[in-house]
Length: 479
Image: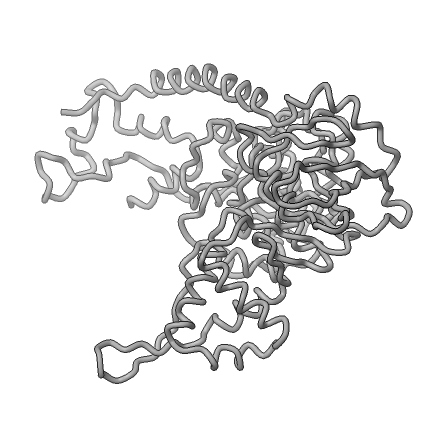
């Protein structure tokens, strides 16, 4: 028995669902914003910044259990700013915030940041940091618009970038011992040769467990690690160089491990493969220069995670080529879908390539409702890919057209894409993917009346429900 499928009813339900749920989701995100509790105190603490002005945070000394005290210091990137470090970390949940003293006022911060500040501060002297959650007035959207384009320069000017990945666990302690040894002895082969097969396997497991931490999946950390001059990794109070991790990963890539298949049996050699999905993206991060190609972004970092939709673009703004930047308006008051469409349009126009419209067909279905309000030619963001990219390398951007004719035209609202195409065939009818329950082992006849779910609806009416390119491509695969 088959359920009647009326595309008009389905589309009506879809529109109704979006109209009701989408505003509720937006309201919840605004109410839970970490800036909300600090709205009044921010007016006392934060003064207007001059052109290219930034704030620095002085973290006063104290033990781990002491109350956190910080002060703000003004600086400008136009002149030589005072020495400072820049923090790269995961913001985490905004539930149950903690209070610190900032410029003598009680100020709410997230638990992750409170834990980070306790580990960053010293017991004997103050340290100076640039921390986005404290140095940018999160209650002032106009200030964010000015500060976001400066973040790239802020990380470039920092004496070092500290990537804080939380507290130690048993495996990370083992990993940091090896990394600290690499800082003293850069010969990775010498270090690995001194280890037994069991120790080497444990180090591999510890390395890939470490690379699977949430930090590495976040969108904002990409520019922070790429642009930093001296990059350091910190767990608890232990700190090692980012280059040591890079050296270790390169050394482990093809290092054979001795494995005994049976007690007393002969030795067998095998290479342990990575056990984390971040591994290929980590390699892309290491290869990326100060400018990120559009294909490097689309195929390498499109699945990066962030808390707010517009940050999928803003997190990479300072890495985009200048011609792509010119299409993007940095304005957090704008609808996220508009910012994303601006970036996607810029990529299509400047690369003269339609590679971007193929991505959605390779992605998993997202759970965030706002993603389904994007045009069907836009990819999803923060969503994993199901298979490898079509382009074999993350090198430059392909150029498909050499003349001056625009590769595509867009409607005034920027949501409709028009391109010239060539008719290569016509879908005459569609069939179910699953075999019929009544005849599971028989061949399906394309003219079989049993395939039509409603007696009054022709078989080709199925095509009206396939509203995006990825689904159409799936239909073509049936033939």
